Length: 120
Length: 107
Image (cartoon, rainbow over all chains, first blue to last red; front, side, top):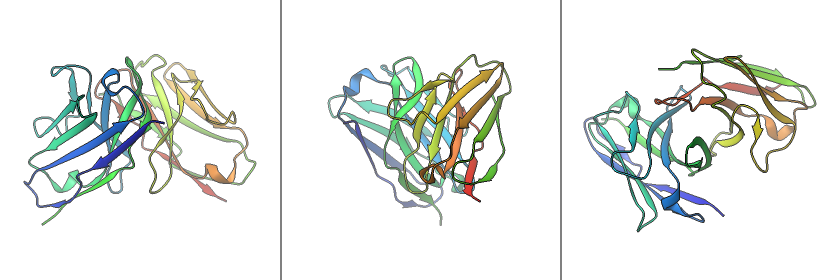
């Protein structure tokens, strides 16, 4: 059974940093692209970032480009999201998500979600 | 960026009703569209991918269709467990974008 467990959420001040982690199990982690999606208060779902199989195979929403960095460690079956220069509008629940297939950007498995609060 | 305009934003319906939700893409996305169901406190759940393919394990009362840049999710006979928010999601081009969501509420 596919399992994704998100962790690392916290209350952080504006301008601060946080690193989210997503521990994967139940599938061959190295064979699937992964992503982060968030739900912010009063707004719906927003795609944040995706990663394929190489350092250059990364994509970001304009709202986080230059501030967030996605990475993966296949030896640990873990996905990461490094978030710097955090803003109040980054507050929300963050989910890691697995692509249904490489080349198909549909998210067929999700983590339980982790709350990030940016506030002074 | 590709905008996904989803309607209605909310709908009140009764158990057994047929419910239709629509998403319009701002440009051609081929059939690169998914539908998700999202309940409070839970992770979103993939229902439909490639506009009309039913994800494994999803009840057959859910179906999807495409006409040009218009996409439809239909629930043929609403069940109590279907009250949730539904999102469309275009996967054709980065940045990936979601519709604004449709909340299906109990009438």
